Image (tube, rainbow, N blue to C red; front, side, top):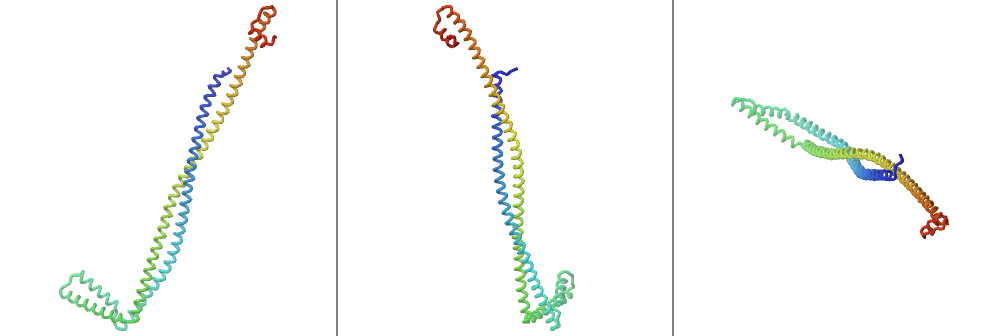
Length: 289
């Protein structure tokens, strides 16, 4: 059954409404895609900035670690000098003690032992008196021996060297710790930035995946929109053709009616009947006069 013009126009209107909705949906998807692309590009810029910072912190950390390595090497050298100075002093003290006929280390060990016994072990008054006298005697011996040792020029010089070596070793150790702390701070900052970067990269990947799906949806929507527009154009051509056919049929019917009426008027004319102006015009229109 052939559709009427009214049916075709209603179908065209429905398709136009559908096309408008598809166009609106497509434009919304393009707008969302544009917004997500801008967000993605902004995040990528942040990621590049973070990666530059990570590179800088890694470079500083590596430089500091190298300085720590060098500082440790120097500290070990200074510690070696310090321990050598201590060994030298012990040798001097041992040599001087032997010359004086006194073992200073042995006296100090005995003193320490007696002081411990006095504080921790129960004693009779007589025993405690003897221990106290021995402790006093040891103190006096050690003090006198140390006085004589301190008057030794060679020992004084060795003690001064030991003091300088210890100060230099401690200063170098402090420098090692300072550099190591700075290197650790750079490393921790780098790890923090790496964590931030990983989080942003994850978000960018999620956005990019969303953009792809939106693009697919937008392409499908646009295709459906074009199909609707093509169908609308097809219907418009069909409606136009149908209207033209109706106009031709109407003109044909009108022409047939005019000819019939003109033929009747012409017969009246031939019979000698009087014609009106409208009758004459109709005859002219029909091409009979």
